[in-house]
Each structure stands twice: as structure tokens, then as C-alpha cells.
Image (tube, rainbow, N blue to C red; front, side):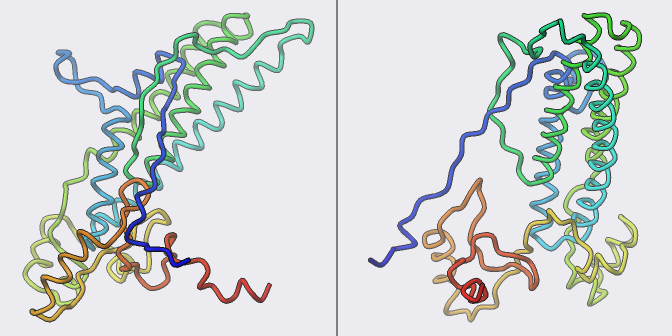
Length: 274
């Protein structure tokens, strides 16, 4: 039986985040200026900022692509810090005598909130927050059973917290949509020259599109259309294209060499040869 692709609905998954420690929950919320203290950018704001950068990437803004690479590097640096501290905390807990049976340190009423990250970098950051929550639980438990002093526990928590806060605040320096595309740079027009003056030069690989984040979304370039067909294309874009998982749309504009995760997998003839 033939399937009407346009009649299919959107993929949806309900995703909730649960945090067990005050330390991780505070990192989720951050701190607003209404507190009377300096603002602290939390994970919620980080997800919003990185989502905005990725949306600008789809508009062929090379500066946004450059920022995604910088965020990749920042996430990788923080991941190294958290992984090391988490391993250290687990080694501490292994010192608990086998005669002591201690269950996992969990909150009886954890903080739970629905999450939407806006992109894959957001999920990487969210996993860091989850690991920080686990790290905090390990350290608090180790301190409770005298495997570590309170001062040493505080220092470990502070080191991990500093790394996460630094990551959350990092995209705050992003200046927003530059208003230029790679085509502008290729033509070296007035928009490109103005952007260089305001935001600086970019590496050749980024301008050529050969160096991009592995999590960069496909660039959505406008399709060249005859004037008489403009209305038809506009109508098709709003009514005929099914919405996909978490707000993605099947635009068919992925750059050459980029995998289309929503392509018809049955079209892969190579699979039949295996």
C-alpha cells in the first residue's frame, strides 16, 4: 500500500531531566540580575545561545560556523576536566569496605524539568551537567563517610563547578547574526568587507565550508525559482513538508557530503550488496 508522506505527523519525544543535587540545579538555572548580584549564565541560557548560533549556521553565516567550532573545543576541554574528577570520585568510593553496604546517593525529590536543547551541542553540554550531578553525589557521599575531608570535597566541587560555569558563559560573547554569507565573501562585496572590519577575518577552510563542526546543521540555501513558481514553492514549504524530530524539517538542502539523516534508507543500493 502506498504511503502518503505528506499525511505523516512529526516525530516527538518527551525528554525530562532529573538532577539530584543543589549544585547541579543551580548550574541549570544560573542567576539573574534580579538577585542584586552579578549574573551567572546557567545551562538554560547556554542551550538558548548555542541554539541561536546553530540557526544562524543554517543561514550560511560563516561566523556562526566558526563559533560552533569554538564551542566544540570548549565542551571538549570541560569534558576532560569532568571525566578526570568523576574518575577520582569513583576511585574514592571504591575505598568503602565491602562490609559496608551503601546504596547510590540519590535525592528523594529530585529536580525535574523538560528539556529541549536546540541542537547536538546542547545534548553534549547537558550530559556534562548530568555527570557533574553524579560527581557531586559521589563527593558528598565520600565526605559523609569520611573518605575525604570537607575542605577537599569543597575544592573538588568548586573546580568542577568553575569548569561548567565557564562553558555556560562562553557563548555569551557571541555577537549575533553577522548578516553575511559565504557567497558574499566569495564576491568580496561591501557586506563582506564590512563584516571583516567588524568581526575580523576567518580561516580559509571555514569560508570554503571545508572545516565545520561535526554537529553543524545543513546549510539552507534558497532554491533558484522562476517568478511564476515562487508562490507554489512557498505553499509547498509550509504545507507539504512534514515536520521532523525536534523541529527539524526535510528541506533537501544538505550540502554535498553531509549525511541526510531523514533520507530514504531504502535508496541505499550498497546495503543490498552486503
